[in-house]
Amino acid sequence: MGAGRQLFTWAPAWMWLFWLAGALVIAAGFLRGGEPQPRFLVSTGATLEIWHGADRESMLLKFDDGSSINYPAISEDGVMIAFVRLLPVIKDAQGNDDFGADLYVANVDGSQPRVVVRHSTLSEIIESPVWLPSGREVAFQIWLLTVTGVLGVLALVRAVRGDRRGRDQKA
Image 1 (cartoon, one colour):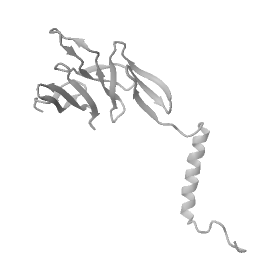
Image 2 (tube, rainbow, N blue to C red; image 1 turned 120 degrees about the horizontal axis):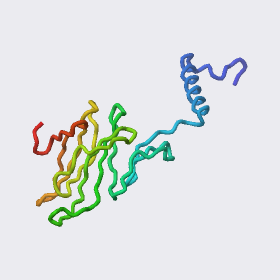
Image 3 (cartoon, rainbow, N blue to C red; image 1 turned 180 degrees about the vertical axis):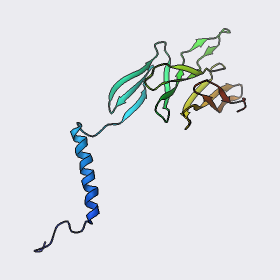
Image 4 (cartoon, helix red, strand yellow; image 1 turned 90 degrees about the vertical axis):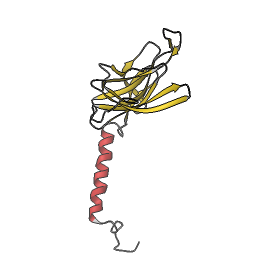
């Protein structure tokens, strides 16, 4: 470098504001104990848990009957969760194996879990719930075992009342 030349003259003045803002965000993270870690809603078989980074923060729900929790979904307003409960295999009245799945909703803290859609036929599998933007309805997929194979159908339910639409029912 020659005499009288400045090191950072190439950066426009407004660029310094972005660098300063970035440095303040990083400094604030270090003051809180490091970079903020994301939170995850995790189903681990019989439990539904909140994980903060790599650590379990809390357990929201647990079933002790051999069923498992799958496909958790948080509503867009963050108030409710929907999940699928895969039930353990049981025998129906005719001696057939039934291993269906039911759709549940609960408050985001895991309180007041309630079934909104029960599987309606033997071994009907409900999966992949997704909240609609209104926060009042959940779309989900149904898999049915038929004589000719497996049939997949999309359906919709009002999470508050449990009014199921889809399949062969009219909207």
